[in-house]
Image (tube, rainbow, N blue to C red; front, side):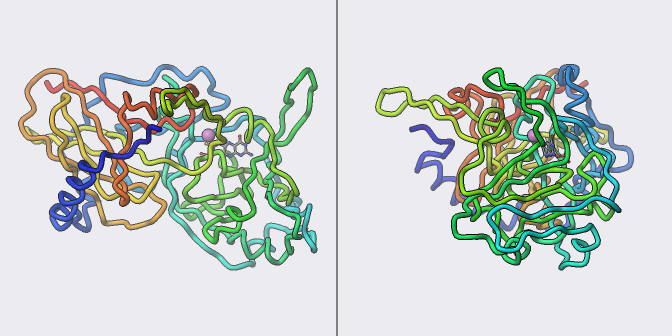
Length: 387
Ligand SMILES: Nc1nc2c(c(=O)[nH]1)N[C@H]1C(S)=C(S)[C@@H](COP(=O)(O)O)O[C@H]1N2
Ligand SMILES: [Mo]
């Protein structure tokens, strides 16, 4: 079976490289090295995403060349909405917790804000990002604040038969399955054990402001380490089920179909999109006089190294910005590009996690055997012209 792992020899090689490079390449306080310096220009990538044919669904994509901050400001953070975009009144809004619990609950926003407060800086990426020619900017990094979900579930008292927690949004649309038309609310679920992860928040604040309407006001789920789809916005009801939940967003869309060759035979799998995957991308090339830099981001797993390949040449180690250390947030990285020759160049990055796994190349069977666009974590190549 093919995996995006390195060969043993590569792991050993990278391992010694990592040890040797650790002191040199992981310096604190490089946030300045990432942001634009006075007198520095950003080169526009020659390749640009296609026009967005679904502006009602996908909004406000990240402009990679404009990326200048570890935190993505709220008004620059991408949005996804599959159904309507409810405008909710915080005064009348309620959160219900029900299903297989001893003590069903109805909570106001003040009830939730009155509970213990917890924050997390989490890079939220849509699992469709880089899977479609018009969708490369489905990612952002924010500081999210709310109250942890687990103590609330414990307080409600999940009954023994409860195995699944379903998160319903207020937004709704009509689903058409087997000629049955069903008006449904957006919903995503998690196994109970996953939902009890102490990092998961009922979130009411984004970057120090009340959650904006487009990001799920007044309350959304924040599931650090998971792809965007798990982070239900406009949260309305949390229900504990005795069975797996298999609606559109669990079992029809957001299902990755892979073909893998095992012992010479094709094995096809269909798996629901869940936890984030190791990934990186070049963000921009900057020029300051004759000095060029390549900067980018890496996320989806604990990052040990980032490497950059120029024009298909050797992989060069990038410097990781250790100024901000947050388990679920992207790492920014940069590399000085010494004396590029005039003309067109390709820039590729790959992330390596602390377990030695390498972000897969585009021709890796892990990527070529994937027949749906979700979970496109293959290496990203951009093109640039040096004048
Ligand atoms: N209620 C609801 N929650 C939702 C969605 C949605 O359409 N409705 N979209 C999901 C998807 S696919 C993603 S990628 C993230 C995007 O979060 P954002 O709009 O705050 O960036 O929200 C998720 N939560
Ligand atoms: Mo998404």
